[in-house]
Length: 100
Image 1 (cartoon, rainbow, N blue to C red):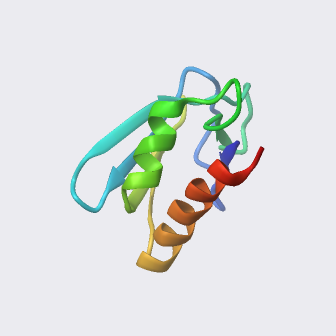
Image 2: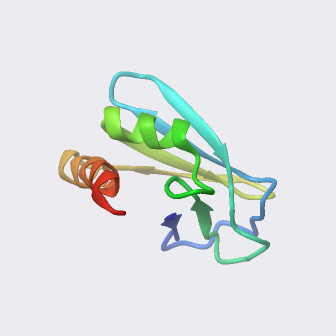
Image 3: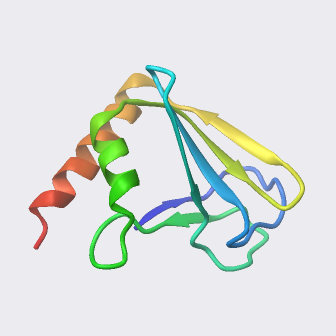
């Protein structure tokens, strides 16, 4: 489970919203939000295990993410990641392969 909760409230979101990942090389990946309706901006993606999205898992393993964009019902919010945070996310996703 990959969950993002922004520190600023940018509106209500639900499973119709999307989460966008923009890599340092310019490639992009988007996925539907796995969270149910909430007004704290929380977005969740299932990327491991039986219910996980293996395509996004592979993208996050192979790419260094530059920014994450969360889509709400009325707007969006983008978060730029510094290099250390991007690498920490990548290493965490890679580490998931070791979990049985």
